[in-house]
Each structure stands twice: as C-alpha cells, then as structure tokens.
Length: 112
Length: 116
Image (cartoon, rainbow over all chains, first blue to last red; front, side):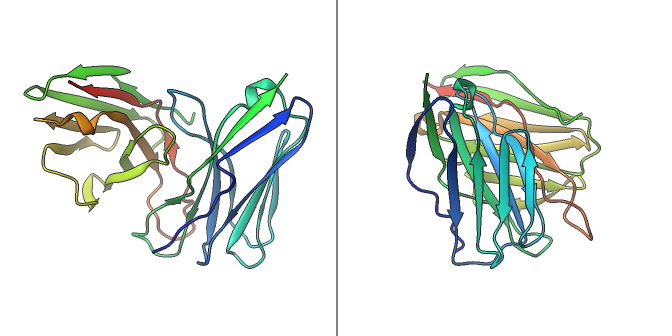
C-alpha cells in the first residue's frame, strides 16, 4: 500500500536553529499537507501543496512539493520553544474516494 | 473560520456503557471524518461521510456506530467498548473531493476516551 516515510522519529534542536524534515514515498501523490500536533490536541494544518515543484511559506515555515511528486520537505527557521510538537506529513493521491495517507510523524524538541 | 468543535473533551466509560461523541463544523464542508489516534502514532481513519452519506467504513467494529444528522454535525455512538479502544478520537472536515476542490482536512481538538 501507499506509505509515507518520515525519519528520524525524534529531532532535538537548539532554540534559534533551523530544522528541515523530509517526507518520502515510492508512490505519486497530488497533494501534500503538513500538520503540527500539540499534546492532547488535534493536528493543525500548517501548509498545503498542490503542484509539483511548488514552494510555499507560512511565516517561519517553508514547504516544497517535490518535483517527482513522491516527496515533500518542511523547513522551520529560527526555531522557538512553541515549535515543540509532532509534525506529520500527509498526502493525497488522485481519485475522489481516495484517503489521506499520514507519515508516522517527527517529534521535535527545542532546547532553550 | 476553520474551526471544528468536539464534545466532550474527555470521557471515561465502563465496558457496559453507551456514550456518544459529537462533532460540529460551520465551514460549509460536506465531507466529515472520524479518526482514532493512539499516543505518538498518526491518526487512523475510521469513517468518512460525504454529503451526509457514509462513503468509507474502514472495517471498524460494530461497537462504533457513526451518524451524520446533517451537514454540520457528526456523531460517534459507542457501546460495549474494550479497554484497547482507549484513544484520542478526532473529527475532521473537508470539502468533498470533486473537480478543483482542495483535499485539506481540518481537525477538531479531539475527545480523549478512556475505557475502564
């Protein structure tokens, strides 16, 4: 089946550093989404990508839809303590009844 | 407004109880979803409603019974649950997947369910 690979499982960075997260697959997707989830809360949509090669920013966040349509990355610049959380990538193939596929998530810790 | 609301926030129930989880959205979305999420795992899809009709049931046990009374509301009725059903239950909504419609799903805050 379709799988999204996110690794490593955890990342530890210093406040102020930049961090990059990748999401890869052997399958082609038409939409890539990045979510952040805080403990005890639902995932919050950060960025949505719809075109291969598309680069989109949202404040300190930048994400790109890979040109092969099989990957995406998320960059966080100048990290702050509230960036702590689990970051999930999600992707959607073609087809009206297709489902959203999620990566396993990366837990980000930011040291002050 | 991209808000999906869920009640209750927390629920503790015994294995013989019957309870319901509620979800509401006022974004005009016509697709609504129930997900189950265990700690530090991604959400797992349970059910999808599109235009108030059940379109996907991911082989969920019958002790979970979804209901979509109207385009803004989604319920999940629970009966005779097992301790392993304890999890965060998330509701989400999106526009139906036709034409140029986007696939963005917006999640509620979840209901933390504990089955004792």
